[in-house]
Figure 1 (tube, rainbow, N blue to C red):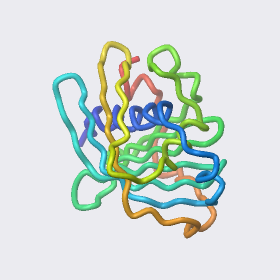
Figure 2 (figure 1 turned 45 degrees about the vertical axis):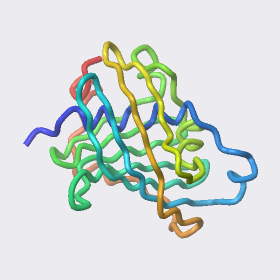
Figure 3 (figure 1 turned 30 degrees about the vertical axis):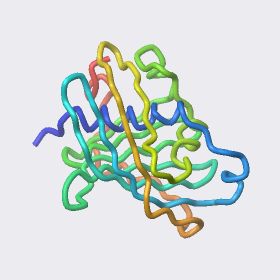
Figure 4 (figure 1 turned 135 degrees about the horizontal axis):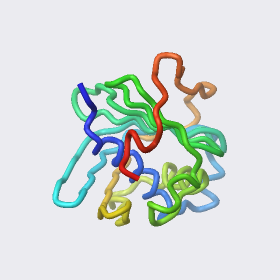
Length: 176
């Protein structure tokens, strides 16, 4: 079963939305780890997708986003480190790893680990965090609302074991 490329778009857009938000220094200074749920809505061209996700942050180390469209079943995972991004297609047991600069010419605005971390620690409120951006020829709009935030409850981070997955190129997953 081939995973729909829209899930990969959602992960990339989730990273990009982080570039438009910032968190206050005082709020950012209070945590070492954050675990939270988020409801994500993506408008891609003429289509609209909505799903739940699990977001985990280890300050200045790792941010993970797990997409769970139905019944809490994880279909894709994004892991962002200081220097690279890893996207796992759980359904097809494949992954891609790339540096932030690899997306630079196709994604506007630009992304970095710092902006991903800032967005993932965005204060909870009644307002959705929203961004509109361009990826190649596609227009994207992403909205996210966080809930059930827990501070300093996570153990040390562990990245996904890649031995279970086939490594593919970014071009095999996305039309770049």
